[in-house]
Length: 195
Image 1 (cartoon, rainbow, N blue to C red):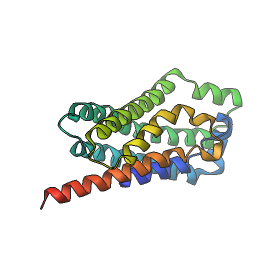
Image 2 (cartoon, rainbow, N blue to C red):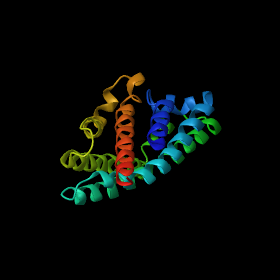
Image 3 (cartoon, helix red, strand yellow):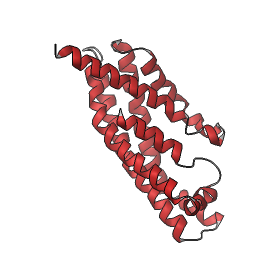
Image 4 (tube, rainbow, N blue to C red):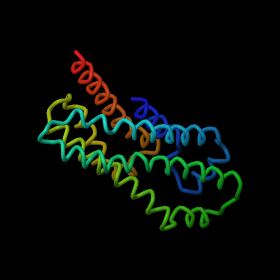
């Protein structure tokens, strides 16, 4: 559950709107915000990576393979969040130490290696999330709202850039709520098995 809370905190803290030049400029204006956001994402990576295997206890025998594949792919994405956190700290270092023009900032964030890393992490995170959600829906061992929120989060992620700047971080609240629901269901399952 702590990984979900930290992921939401990181998403709501890091600036997600404006041009890349504006985002890099905000690193000099609000260094504490960047440190908090990157630190929250780093700890979220750890918490989520440790928590993903827990969802396997919520699958049934008929959905275990899909759940295992989804957990494996999702784990790549959750571990990759640590790279995204490091990237946030890298942006902060660049923004506070260098005075980049808009063209230089755009060139920096369109680097093919950087885009491959971010898109690969995003694809693994959301693809694994979607597979796990489908396995949980088919298993019917958790409240249906939790995997449904996961599916809505994963499917609407490409649309996030069309949201107003103020609402982009709120998108992560959907997943945070779903993960908290899964954590409670896993805890209940564990407590029931101990009786």
